[in-house]
Length: 350
Length: 122
Image 1 (cartoon, rainbow over the protein chains, first blue to last red):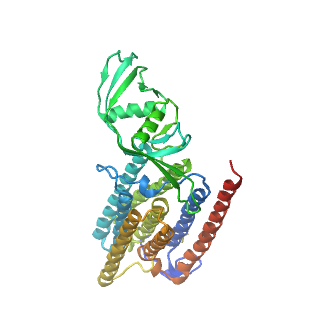
Image 2: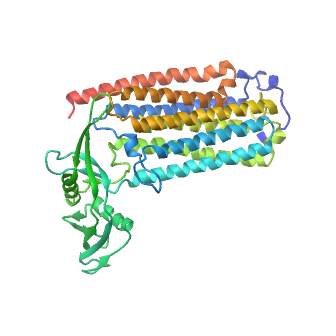
Image 3: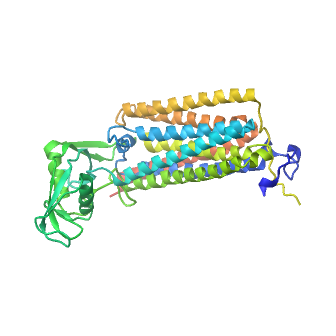
């Protein structure tokens, strides 16, 4: 095993060819080869994303409109969260390079300190990504709407504004658990969860919602505010969409007409692999694939960092006389940061 | 027999306390640069919208800044700038040739498909 070789081997005799190509060790060169191939994979994914975006006939979503929320603070902070994630990853890259630097001075305590910081940063990034995915999958309270009447019939619009909280359901037709006249009071979020499910399944029709136990109810809710329907159609070669906006009463009438139509898919909430409320289905698919593939790299990076950290704390590398293992995992970790820089630009910024 | 592929040795694996100080100063400087660039990108992204007629300038600026950030990460954090020149170019040149070609060919094809849909498509 690699860990047993504790004697320092003269560079001139290092490889079996009696030379050391590029003056680097075998392990480091192989790490670079791997990173180049991995970079080609990510390059291919981002180019495929660009290809799809340029071919599509539908208007492509804009990053700062799709990703404008912060935890606890709600909407209105375009790209702030992704910028924060980028910052977290850059900082963890810095702590990694400081660990490598400490290793060059044979400072075991320094290596351990900075590697712990790197691992914590990695977990923070993974947590942030989990939140981002959850937000993307659940979507907004309005979802996107297919307009069913008037001059825009058949168009799909994204909806902005504030969804008035649901207060209660009043049962008008008994089901398994509820009798006629029951008033179901839960938190607005819980009520909305039932409402969303029913709308998605086409079980909301003409002001009545069919609950999961089969009972039929009417709902009471606060008034929606500042509702705006935004219809985007394919634009010019710079993929600038043509935008039509419907405001006020007109927007509310059109929106609730679709909700009450009982038509499955008239309202799309959040995102899955079939469809999403933000734009073309490929947009969601690429989001899941690219950020997911990157997130998986971060996850494996954290795991590898933990293993190497254990090696450092047991003194394996100190006995060996150098901390090159830390440098090699560092290469992988910086690569993960490097990929994120490109994902950030091509998925979120432009 | 001793296997040469698993023997651990390392070149350039040590530096002195003083050299360390210098390197650390450089690391913090690069950190500051990367942070400022990211903050700047987000600020511009929030201020200039995609319907702006000069959006293409912003787009090019973003791509330029991204390459700048990538350069700092690869050359400083990954120490590729400190490796032998021949290694540096063996890694960077083939990659760039291939990726630039791929971007060119994919986007050209994509625009052609887009045009075809617009002209003949349902």
